[in-house]
Length: 384
Image (cartoon, rainbow, N blue to C red; front, top):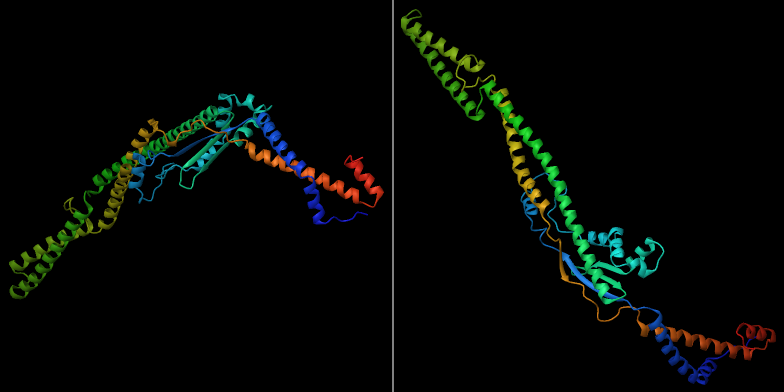
């Protein structure tokens, strides 16, 4: 059986061993610090801050897209927005970029791993890239020397910018190819629409549907009014002079001629090409309007596509940096890892805890009434 120890007894053990604890603490701190100093190589952090350049947002292509923002049409790959910083993280941690850094700065040998996969994972753990609360983008690279950390950071920013520039050029190239195809298609459709309009104009005699319809209606109304007037006049002459009188006969001849003219306008027989027959007016006018509408639509589409097409040709040739560097990476003045003082204190604290545990176990064993238990614990902790 083991007698329980009171708090005072625990404190008594600590008080009795306080000199040993102080000496142990001082020695362990010193030894831990020296061991950390010589065994754990220092690491240095280099930091850079970047933002997306305004050049992309103020480009002519974006301005053109904004000017057509109300049109119900979208062009793939064209956007008036800025660069999404999520792509920064994707590119920075991509295997392609990391392997470039590994080969350039001989990290495969420095890290001492057997495979490229392990080396890539180690390098990835030494890079921290994130968006700040202010909307900028911060990149921190850790390496064995301040100069190497700064060089790796600046190389990473350059590679990121190169990738974004190439991506924008490729996007402009894809846009240009897309718009070029659409331009050729619309131009061909416009040519066909123009040919159809000319052909229908020659066939129907309609050159300006609104104006010609107006003239046809005016001519028909005028002839109808004149015909009614002549009919009233002829009836009057017949009553006054008789049906066979010359004046009545002449009036009937005039009425017959007017009726022929009215019928010609109604049925499209004879008459001027500028005056459309009322019977054919709706069909001819609607067909003309449709042909004319197609020409106008394809003209408007060309007006939209041509500026975009020309701008994408220009954008494809540009090589403007996408990133603006706010803080360029420079060599750090102090190490970032390891925190020797904190590690030394933690190690010393653990050593002191182990020492106190050992002394408490000795005291408990010495108070034990069970000889067998006392023998086992002494053997475990080498107290014999």
